[in-house]
Image (cartoon, rainbow over all chains, first blue to last red; front, side):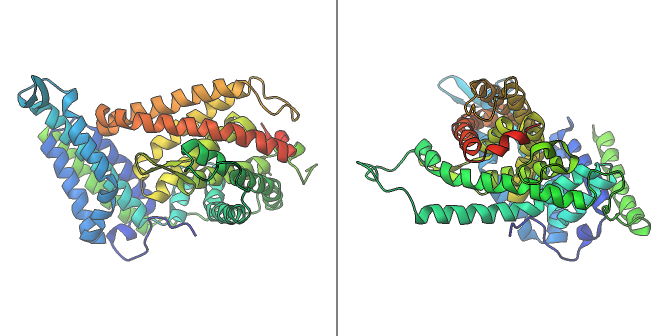
Length: 262
Length: 184
């Protein structure tokens, strides 16, 4: 089984309509790219972090942060040398390693990347992948495209299980060592070459499933004018209106603050 | 449906295309997320997503590589918790598959002809698209400094993708000839 980020629980973010959340995710990502003042962007980041801490628990903030920490360190170290204008803060051997402009740019990038990471994390942590596909369908994703995504999601565990089986089988009956082989550990491309037989088997077994799946889809009416099945629609009405109103309110607040402090 | 066993004329039916795209998307996601080769000097891992993309581009053509390459790597990003990169992966790896598939498709070769010299040019163009795309996107996301640090890793990953994708495309064609009829 492939584990996704989603965790079922009760909370404000979980109760929000997935379509409203999707719109809000896109808006927030755009906001993190706007040329706003640093304090302003930091305020957005703090607000997103606060929502995650309140709705999911403060410990949940560490999860995405831990994954992006190495890249944040890289941004902090490597961005300032590319911006030499401004007041010199750190100079080594006459070369300005950090200026105030460079440090501000590094802070902007760190806030942007952390903010976008938090936004995507909060969305996927609180939205069932099935509802995600249905949301895209509601926004106009064609039936065939939605079907590809949902079947692919279903087949990921199958292909993974296939890979595990084939790899174990190949390990059991590996080729007999010849000459000095075995005395040295193979390099990257040696390891890649060693994995080719197992990957070939996985690909052949996967490709052979295509006609079988195609037949199953044809019997379900895929490709015909009148399909025998369709995606269930997401509920409309009060819940959608409530979520839409909340998201609209938050976005109005974001726009107002952006206009006010720019 | 004329042929139910090996693709054949079925390759042009909408149901076959949906099935092929879905299964190859799953394969690309698994090759990206699960199948990894340790890199000794950095103690990191190299994923084989590019192997799947080049295999698909050389075997199934540009449209399949565009969809399964983009969607497969984006799904892998979503599953592994790096969803912030998913839109970029969707675009960059999709374009990589499209370009590689288009160049490889200039002369696709018949079932008996296993190796296609155009694959090398296709892989080179795919490498440029993938590395250039991530450099450009990385510049906006994390700045030029951090994006440049990622460049050697992306190049190595592409090199591994070519070194794995070409032998795999050849091996699968030899072991399962009906695959040549599944291209569109």
